[in-house]
Length: 140
Image 1: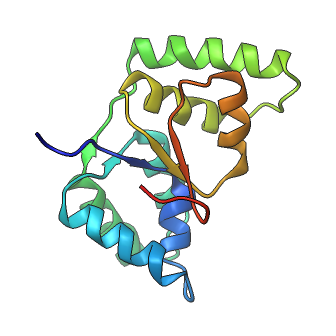
Image 2: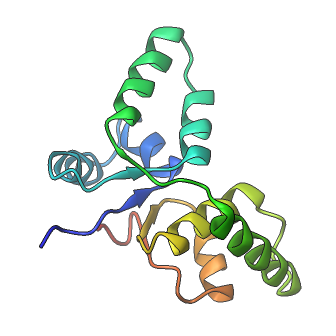
């Protein structure tokens, strides 16, 4: 049986590629890439590609992401995002539209979300079914 996919948030991609990033994060990312266990989703791709400083890096990232399993944003994802956003707001959480959409993608596709962003841990208070790994405390 194949190991399950993992959806790294843009915060993981940014942290893993930062100069001076922790070696364990870089190593684990490379291992999961070799195992073909990493997925990508449109809002994460958008966040990372918007951060490219030069076109050659943009093209390199685009090719890299094209090789990953793509988790689509479909009607089920949007429905889950709307509900999650509504319930998050009722609990007093700020409007985190991109994070809400990313969490809905992970929930809909039944994949854990790997992140370096406290907002996702807040969203777990709203939707405990959201599976997360939070670097630096955990890794998949």
